[in-house]
Image 1: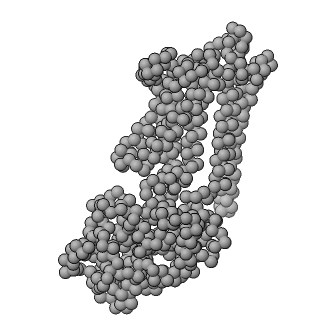
Image 2 (image 1 turned 90 degrees about the vertical axis):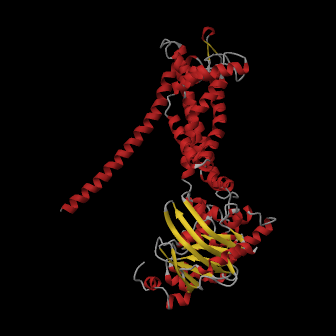
Image 3 (image 1 turned 90 degrees about the horizontal axis):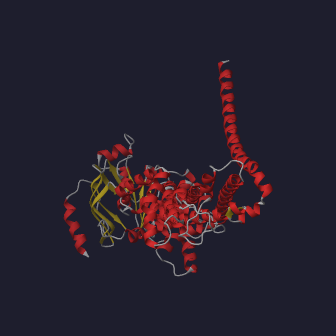
Length: 275
Length: 299
């Protein structure tokens, strides 16, 4: 097991990122991640540990690579033809950035919630049941119903939809749809949930609900959230990573990063001097 | 002042364009209906002598006073349904290959080929049919002339496939990318993507492609004329020569205008017209009901 991890130890000396890149007992270990879109380098030699049961926020100006980095973690960049990702990403002692990795299994372990709510044009029940069904997680109808109920409960949506599970998922409001998408991704019991600006299409009340939910979900999942809003990062996360032009500039506890940034760029960004 | 004037110009031009669209619609509908009325009117002398039922069920033997077009209805039916049976699965498979499975370069190449095929004149297909397909069919089955239902259906399948493939592809690419991303992020395989998102989402497009192909197959004259053999006898096997309704119209066109033979082409026209209309409408209804009742079949 430890060949992958010990190989990573070598790189400990190499760091240009300021702050606490490494943590004890990481859930996800990313080393020397480079991402290219054709000739253009979108992520430059980024290393980062992500602990279990933490919410880590990725912030930075548009085009800084934070979403690209997020998509490395469930291999969603595979769907882009010109995109090449190199480096090691270790989850559960397996380097998930190797060609032989079964992305179907990986994506069951690493769920994703998108910027715009994207429920399937199916019923609420079917939206949540879809993942467990294709991964064969439920033995029978009753078990599937239980998964649907518990996922919707964890996503804080159960009370609002329990009487209309057969209504279309698209009939819900934007905030409800996004919570439905969260329920859909937690229904397959992932370890990590990636959220790519999950509130950017929502109003403040729906946003507050999702943020509260993220805090609750931390008990069971590791959450990596990309956000444009620094207020949101400071409200929901324990650690924050600041990206700039493909570099990971600084990582640290959210409180420290926002009150006492160590890098000049971080300070400039959070004080609104650019961005 | 100018403002009021400007406003008037705006609203009146809006009104004008509305009239234009209305006029275009009315003319279109009237033309379609008047074609039908025209055929019925010109066919009336025939219907007054020979009952419609007889026309629809009798054999074609003008020398014995029989002017039925039943063999032609059978011929059309056989060729059209056989060609659709061949072309539909092929086209769907082809579209799936281009959209989802083939490597990008191959997909682009195939797409171009299909686009090019839509532009090939029908008579060229007919030529290839006569000199290539017909001898092959004759050799394979060593029966008849090779000008038969099977040859015509194979060739017609080739003719209608490109249209179907392009319509299918169009409807595949209209599937919202967000649904595909959602499925990928859940760990869905390519097969699940196809079966659970693409095909259900493209249902309307698939029906449309099928209808267009059906219309083209029903209406095609050249291939039937060149490859199906034009025999007036009742066909009994796929290797028999047949004459389709469209081919009958084209062939009898040269006959004396006052003869009964000539007047049967109006019967053929009416049958083709109603046939297309009824098939189109019923498929549309079927699809509409299906879409209504099953917005939510299991994924």
